[in-house]
Image 1 (tube, helix red, strand yellow):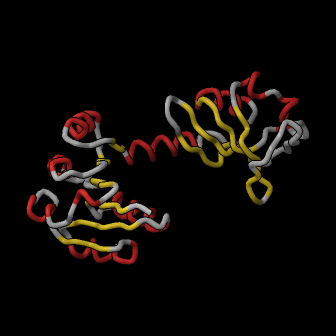
Image 2 (cartoon, rainbow, N blue to C red; image 1 turned 180 degrees about the horizontal axis):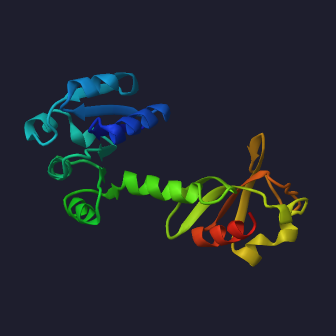
Image 3 (cartoon, rainbow, N blue to C red; image 1 turned 180 degrees about the vertical axis):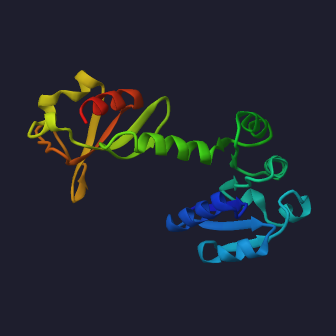
Length: 216
């Protein structure tokens, strides 16, 4: 279990708190708006009303005790930047800040952020890829152009064993699991695939798209 400090109770901050709560993490929320913070009380361990750019207020929170600090401010970049910088000065172990542009990312990284996230960009990318083919049920983007996709088995693969398809050598992808009601990760070269069955596939995003767009 981690102790996480979330700064900002807007939409991004709200969903972040809810997900952290679902994962069993301890969350402290900070926001200047009491009403917004109050709505998130069921999902956080503690909520503090205050200005995250106020050094005295932030010092009172014991920032260095948190495993992770997430700056979820999205409507005031100056406040986000000042908060990120102040968190670093106060000894935050790891800071993740929200940005909406590349220039914002550069400033945040130079002023204490260990990582920067772009919620709108990530959601836009996910939406474009997820709904660009009827074969795609879900996907997770990894690093260096790789992704894990949940896909429907195409008709040409129906009734064939994974080993016979030789997908690793022929396509450069790996089948991690198949789903019949529940996901089965215990697969071998003798596992037989069935048309429209779901499977988890790991590989380069561009390679997977080419293969399954052609076989839709």
